[in-house]
Amino acid sequence: MFKGGILIDTAVKSRLAEIARKVRMGIIESTYHAKAGHPGGSLSSAEVLTYLYFREMNIDPENPKMDNRDRFVLSKGHCTPGLYSVLAYRGFFPVEDLKTFRHIDSYLQGHPSMTSVPGVDMSTGSLGQGISTACGMALGLKKRGGPERVYALLGDGELQEGQVWEALMFGAHYSLDNLCVIIDNNNLQIDGAITDVMSPYPIREKLEAFGYSVIEVDGHSFEELEQAFNTARNTKGKPTAILMKTIKGKGVSFMENKAAWHGKAPNDEEYMTAIRELSQAASSEVTK
Image 1 (spheres, rainbow, N blue to C red):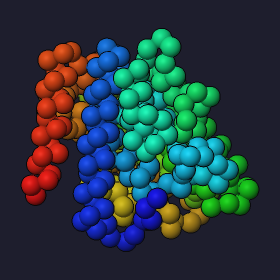
Image 2 (image 1 turned 45 degrees about the horizontal axis):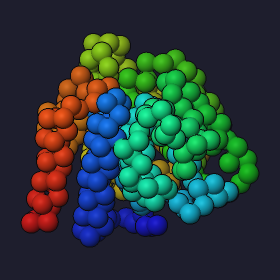
Image 3 (image 1 turned 90 degrees about the vertical axis):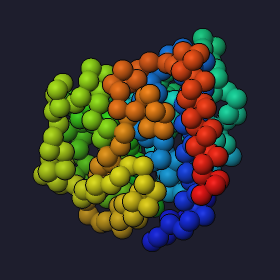
Image 4 (image 1 turned 30 degrees about the vertical axis):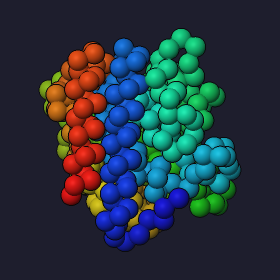
């Protein structure tokens, strides 16, 4: 595993960018073969998932249940295409299995299951419950006195759930400085812009009022993610919230900033276009 440093070097950044591109390919492959799924919010999370699993977290694909591992909770549980893709490329299970996503006999179902998918630490689906369980996990680990950390990824639309704010109060009350809450702020949910459906803004001010150290980043920048996670790791006495500005559908031109791609699979033509664009992105990276 990489060790987080103060400044991310060019070689590491390039490697992470290439992994994120592959993760996006996996997202497209899985949703296309399932004819269902949630590509938009999975694509917007590709960089942070890549950073967590390939640089930040203490994990071992050969021993997914090792006792001293860091934990990750996908609170926006519908974005399994992103989680499964990064787990596959990290070596928890074969990449080829992504094509079985949501199939009747597949272990890769639409929401993550900790009982069937290697590397999944918590079964989630109903919005708000993931961050709640993450807080409980963080408290248990903190009482045990070890170095383990808990990371929870939420959608910005998920902030409309009252249970989220109960959990956030819990995290601050118990000074869970081993908890890192990550919010994917792409400004879109299934019914449109979050500002039109039920605005959670101002998000930063609310999180600070609830007792969190808040860091705002470009969620597609590995440099900013590195600095944010380093800061979070060194923050004591309170939990950290990383508020990521992202683009829903990032990396696939016709999906970007389109609420329609929250929960829709690409058809044959769209699949080919997406794969072509992501393949060209790799060629472009090589020539830089």
